[in-house]
Length: 146
Image 1 (tube, rainbow, N blue to C red):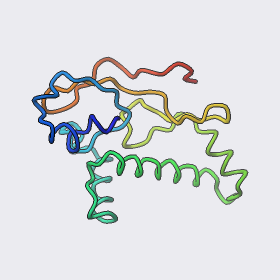
Image 2 (image 1 turned 120 degrees about the horizontal axis):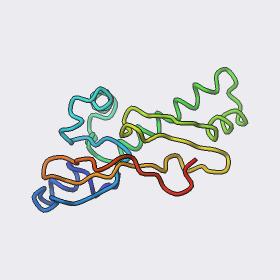
Image 3 (image 1 turned 90 degrees about the vertical axis):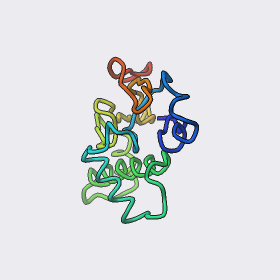
Image 4 (image 1 turned 180 degrees about the vertical axis):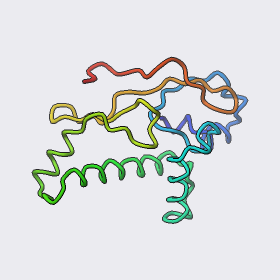
């Protein structure tokens, strides 16, 4: 999700009334959007931020991206098992299939291969209704999705 679509850091400061009808593509759930307020993954993320980065705004899109990136790294390290070698780490990092992260919009998954290291090529289109992003249609994929 582009930082310009963030409710807390972009739309509210600019005036949400000015963004009604705006469209975006979303790969992650958005902090500050009422739709995700009680979502277990969002509650866990906010608890993490409160404990480990209390001075940082949880709604900051880059903070969420850092948290998501750490989740991918944790998954990759777990798949390494007891073989924590450079070769196995690279192998595991480039052989990810249909990883659904808790903060990703349902249906958006990570797929990486040695030939295609772009972690996700899917998103959900959404339109702003003045309060929240409303999903339009289903998940869309960029060309080349495996």
